[in-house]
Length: 178
Image 1: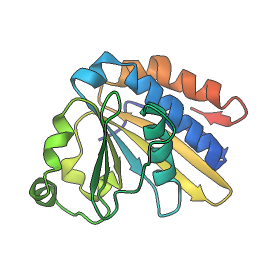
Image 2 (image 1 turned 60 degrees about the horizontal axis):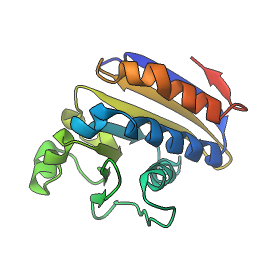
Image 3 (image 1 turned 180 degrees about the horizontal axis):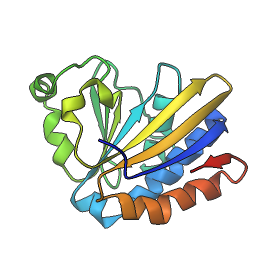
């Protein structure tokens, strides 16, 4: 499936990636559709590209305070945070099938209201929802590239009208590619 929209930022510091995570979370949390239907945001990229750092900033920005402890769900597979809306942070690195997702009870969350924030989402391609947002991180150490891709029409309007704007405004110093 091809994305209906895509936007990319080049040569970002980790702090800038975390800022995109923060403003993205706020934009999604402000959408009534997310509270009623739910959304899946998949984080993809190689080891060390900043997926967990993105997730930590994203979740902390929706918590009742920066003191919310956010840890990688690598071994637990799923952590649920009592944010508004609820965030379910998953890591599918060790999974390979929908059967495994169902066996551990994760599949039911993909249709629930709130936000599914899933690292390594492409490990189980048959579980990808028809409509979702993908955050692709490449590079490591000093500078990273970040792309946001929208799959399906449901989220196109939200992302096209506010997501790009808040991310770009937050990163006025970053180079932007359409």
